[in-house]
Length: 258
Image 1 (cartoon, one colour):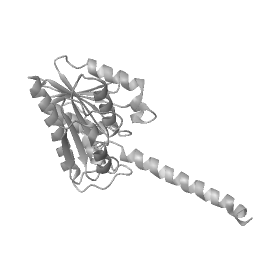
Image 2: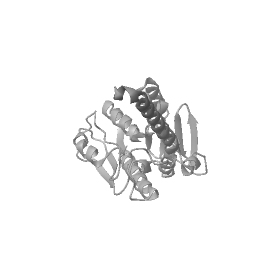
Image 3: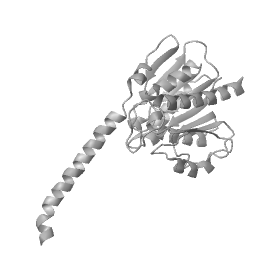
Image 4: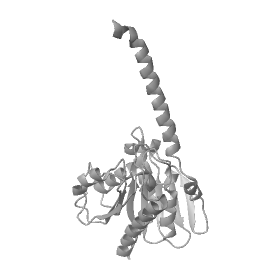
């Protein structure tokens, strides 16, 4: 009887706490996943890089002659795609064409598996010069998309997987193309334990780049992501290591083409 008497009060408290927690999480997420000022500045055309946007695809082209490889890159889920603009710009400054392909609904509600994404990927590949080799890559959920694509088609010349425990659902161990896996030792989402567990699904010659003290959020130019761990390396240093590893892979593909 006593439990029945107080149950309406307990229920109201639980509902209030749940709604409050949900509201806090949503607000935090909206703030955390926003592109920072450096990322927004990197979306503007200048003397070195031409930036265009159309139908969910950002294109970064060197204003001078482009080399013989193109990077097709996919953002993390829920993250503002512009958060990867500095990475795209750095690759373009190095002489390579970059296509930053947005995930429909930012990867939520099945956007990363949707027909709309397949259409964007097809459109992106159509825009690439036939003489160019294509490197596919991504961060977090974007790396899942990159893993799936590289497993389904032999048209890609390289793969870069950043801040992800994948490949988890596909086997890439027989790939004969360069693969780079970039891991933060403080990543709270794609933890080192999860990453190592799936290492058997990668080629033996995979290049592993362990960012000591790096977390999940600092692989993009946005805020601190829920569930992540605090980094023990500066964002600038973590992003520099990541960017150099991406450029190194593309350059190796480019050299094999010439």
